[in-house]
Image 1 (cartoon, rainbow, N blue to C red):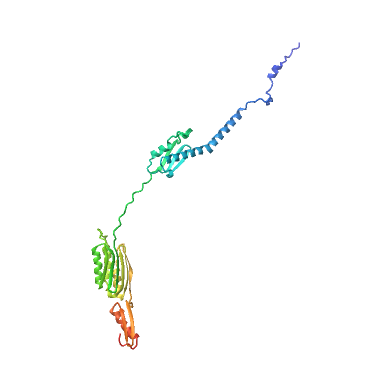
Image 2: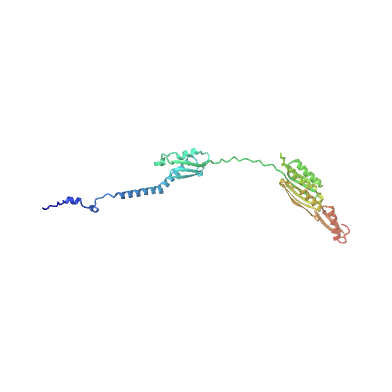
Length: 317
């Protein structure tokens, strides 16, 4: 007995077949994109928008806000040249020196005030403000410093039979000390041109400095000095003396050999035995006439003998 094998219908065969390969619709009707492609396009679009915002948008916004802030300060009568505005998108940091007559609160209020004429966030402008400014230093009024009165400054000149005192001393006692020392040298004429400063408190040691110069003058005689020059102040004593003998020079040097703190003494006393003040010679047959001035009797004697020896046949000088 044979059995019949049931045959599957064509519909059953169709549903049980394998997956067929997808082929584009040749009819030209639009087909939906795959999900992965849609996400890729969206991601790239977002990245482009962010890049445009970073490269162009943020600097443009910062520039607009900067211009607006400078304009607001100028309209408020504030000089913005001492301020440095640094932007980070809509956040503002202010550095520099606060303009004169402007407070921190006033500066913050002007920079953060809204502007209704601007659209979008430009209407409010700055989001956060950080002030890192220093107060402008107001210059102190100029003070007039009174000049100190003239202190010790003396110049002494002694030559021939004349002497002069010029400059300023700090007391009457100092003046008298120098005048008496010049009188002790035997000079006939003293030109006293000293001024007295009249300071209330004479510095300790100033009188001692004047005494050194006075002792140098007392140690000599005007007939033995060709020229005496000295200048004195609180810091130093300088002298240049030309004498007719070594003893006088040594006496002056000894008087100047004094040690005083913060006081410098410098100079020299040299001998000039052959020096003359003025001399003219007239020879007339047996007579030789010498006219002029010399410093001492010793110099007068030496010149007379020298003239007799030099002029043979001269009977009278």
